[in-house]
Image 1 (cartoon, rainbow, N blue to C red):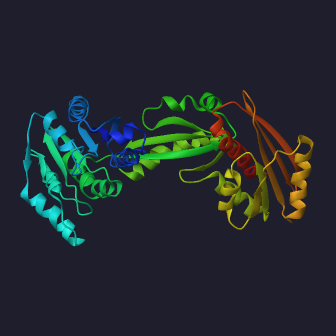
Image 2: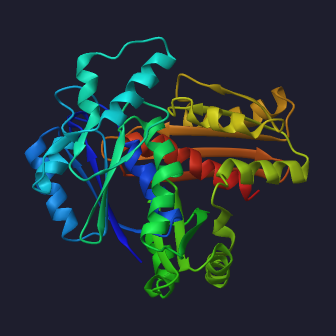
Image 3: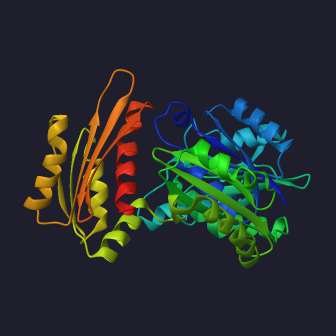
Amino acid sequence: MPSAEIISIGTELLLGEIVDTNAHFLARALRDAGVDLYRKTTVGDNAQRIANTIRESLDRADILITTGGLGPTVDDPTREAVALALGRTTEYRPELWEQIQARFQRYNRQPTENNKRQAYIPQGAIPVENPVGTAPAFIIEVEGKSIISLPGVPREMEYLMQHAVVPYLKSRFHITTVIKTRLVHTAGMGESLIDDMIGALETLSNPTVGLSAHSGQVDIRITAKAGSDAEAEAMIQPVEQQVRQLLGQSIYGTDNDTLEDAVMQNLIARHWTLTAFECGLGGELVSRLARLGEPFKGGEILPDQPEADLRLRTTAEYQIQKRVDVALGVFLIPGAERQEIFITLVSPEGSKEVTRPYGGPPGNAPRFAVNTSLDLLRNL
């Protein structure tokens, strides 16, 4: 199976001015195409540094994908950098200039002289027409390996990756395998405890099993390589079953399932309605509960922290006032070294108070509080 690396090009990425969503998309596309991705690198708009990075990557990988730096301006150096890395020059391709002009004419515009720079690509490169933009892409095959340079505009990069690059890779490298991933979502159990319970599965080689911790929830990732989706699924299923047997009720869903989905299913099954109010969460609880649709009868964001002995009473009052079955109150109490999460829940099954300390990054505390309270709701 071929290995790949991604080089994201752009000083704006290094300065944190924009988020590199391109690398995320490319990683998913390579995974789905059955290509192992081992590294992602970000380099600024400097031809020499880009060239050095390309040479280093070619020593390790079979496939190198660059994104960005194919525009018409002086600070778009990818064409020159790829040529420099391979000891070549760039050459003018009149057919590319014709494509660029035709693209502009389609929108009743005239290209400027600097757009002509985009018709120059490294000597011997295979041009890739860009029907959704003005920056042609290109591929260079060298010693059994491939360098693929794509535009940095996400819409253009995504289109070319799907319609040109993936078919090329499957043909060029005779890829017959697929990589399939299942995410198993859990809540209410910490990463270290989950690791202790399923650690033996994390030593598997195919499928592989790994953990990804978030604020108040943990994902278990099961990844299989096989000759088809069906074969990969058949490999994943028994491992997923073992995970479910070991972790039980802490699992609330897989892949695109959310905690909100689990809460909604529970409320609908019981024919219950819900209201909620929050303090110190910045509206995150109410906004996420709004995704529940019909079972959620609205909520409020309170500006002040009620006294501790009033919190449960306030929640019970909300249940009566709103004429709902379940009322939830979530309070984030700031502290110098750690924050306190106080949750009150009133339902037909009685009332409950939960206090949880939180000592992680302060900015993650609202999400931790919301995920903790949603976990309580799904387990009613």
